[in-house]
Image (cartoon, rainbow, N blue to C red):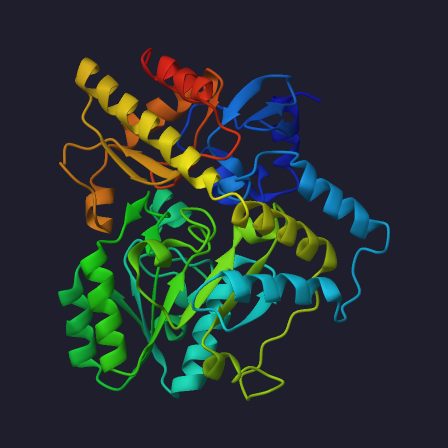
Length: 422
């Protein structure tokens, strides 16, 4: 079957023909390519068309498609079994590796997705503090847990959904909204809700309203405010963890969270997630403590093996990050040069290997309100043009592009060559 046939048939059996909304290409005048295979930095659809992949499965494929270390580790495990729902040496190996190579993680709990990691971290913070309220930031997306679907970014923003039907008011009454990169908005909430706030959760490099890095002084102040108020600071590094640096965005900023959530890269391409942090907080989890969280497939041996192979490769090759940063700089500079040549209003936000091109007349994009001012019709024109011409970019203004280890200068030149014809 060809792309169009598969997509049309899929609509009969899956809502919108997809299993995650942004894949439906709702804002573009093309159907989504149906991906059949991948190799290094390239992917291929069912029509046989080749694309340079700047989405990378929304981040996880940092080592490229069909990485041999990951494939070999998975093959070895599959010979012994797929899953047991019981303790294995593989989950110990990955847990120990993360705790020993990543700062600020004394203990860790494996789960199966980023959503599960963030919702579990918030539950743990509430159990540890005995408080109910949390602060999140407008435009930050922490998964589809009810308590997070307020002023969320990503697909919610793309579809202009302010929250989501099906979420009772009671589920969000304890969620307070602050403005990203605005410490005064955080302080105002603490002043209004003194001794009620269990946790502040934030993406230190936001990737779901487009890429918007936090200002260092903002995160430093946020840490001070949380410490002063005995509130748990949670860094959602589902996207930035092991990506912008092996030890995550927190190592770039030099700010220490109490809890950190992970997913994407830590599974080597398989569904994965985890949350970890200070020992005294993590020991509140059942069976040691009263905070209950469980998962039948948590610590699945196939995922643990793929994750270990992926993280080991990244940890042992710090040159990978300098390579990706160099390519990111080339791409950023090239896009800005093209924008001047063509008189296109845009801003490029980048953190190492995460990037978003905002089509906007603003001089900078540093908050949700800035991101929403972007020209989404222009972005759709850009994305459709790039994808039609073999450069696979996100179909939404409010998603991130990703660079990986296997991208080359030729890939960057192809991107820029196609963009020049926009």
